[in-house]
Length: 159
Length: 166
Image (cartoon, rainbow over all chains, first blue to last red; front, side, top):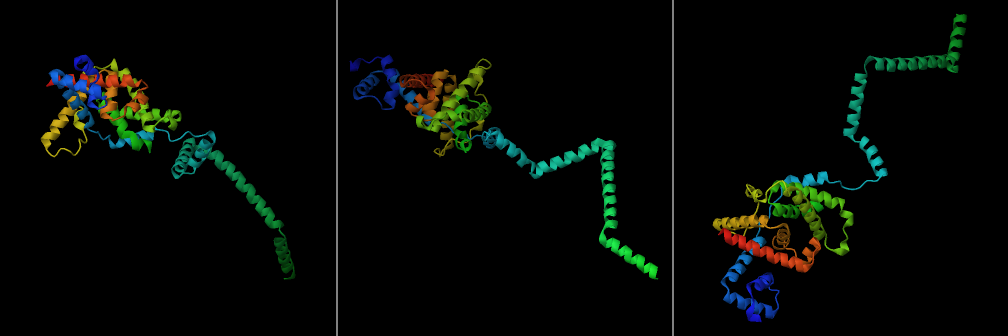
């Protein structure tokens, strides 16, 4: 039986033969067939060439930017709602974000034009004059000022 | 960390499968996104991370390949793509040997791309990537007998194709 191996049966055992994983009997029968069949011998050397070429296959270096692109496009972690909220507020404190918000506020104020400025300034003016009145009243009602005024009046009368 | 450690292997796997550098770049990106999305399904007790990642890669490549299959003939896939070979090893002291080796690699790759999908993937995993049979079983989720038989058939077809060329 060992000596009557046909080419089709031989081919089935070829990889195992090359990888030396055949049992002793099978190996003997394969080797006997190899001695008697030239085309199967050529097939064995062809397969060994394929395996050797695969083992020595060149390893290509990916472009340097590829890893960076992958990392940039891959989310780092899944954030909870709380973390997202916290990171939003944290981002507001970053100089770049603060500058952007400041610039946006100036531009919007400028675009808003006279009406906005007038409203802002008239309100500010009202607030300032009100504060001024209160300060003056407090000044004249303060005991020190009243005392100074009374002394000055007495001085004027005596002189 | 995972990207830096494994992207070269994934990139080469993708390139070996389809023979195009531009597609290998896009596929590598796609594969890592898929790895990220499915990372929670990886169970260390069921096998090595690399094996799991190669299974994800293989599935991704197969999906991509099937999409493209109808749009393109396989035979034009290698044209003009081999200029970018970055390294061929330092074992060749003689430039002529290196050229012969490179030529052989190109012919083997051209033959590989012409193989059917089933045979090609087992040959890439076994002969180019060097995975053990058990790992290939894990990656492809097919019986070991099927893996062995496909590898044998694939090698024979490759040998016959290369012989015809000579």
